[in-house]
Image (cartoon, rainbow, N blue to C red):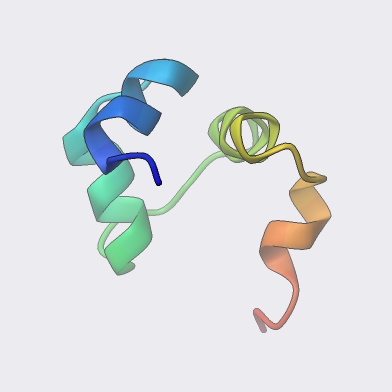
Length: 52
């Protein structure tokens, strides 16, 4: 298990930004979506499944 703080540092974004995205309070751009997907070793499209 990895902390949100460690993951945010690993993918090159602030913990506050990542937290806002995770909670739905911030919109995410394609570049940051790709950074998160790469950090999780998944395709960006995998993160969007189930979103309308």
